[in-house]
Length: 124
Image (tube, rainbow, N blue to C red):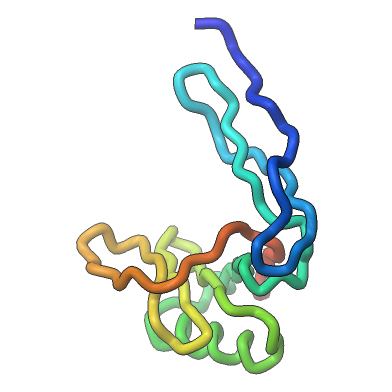
C-alpha cells in the first residue's frame, strides 16, 4: 500500500480555552500517517504534562508525590503523566485519581481525560 498523508488542517478551536487546535503526529496505521488535533495553547488545562523520573526514582509513592508537587506548583494543570525509566507510567488528575497506567489489568474510572500533551519534563 502506498504511503498516504492525512489532512493536517485543524478542524475547530479547543472547546476549553478557545485557542486553535494543531495537528500533532501520533503514528502510522496501514501506511497512513495519523494526526490528532490537540490544543496549541501550552496553558490549556485540557492538555497533560509528561514528567519522566530520574534513573534512581521509581514506585507508586514517588510517582504520586511528584504528580502532587507538580500540581501544587502549576495551578492551571489538570493532568500529568509520570514515567519511570523502565517504561511504567501513571497518569494523575489534579484530585489524585488515575486516568492512565501501564498496568493493562487496571480498571480505571470514566472521569475526565486530557485531549493532548504540551510539556515534557525530565528529572535528573
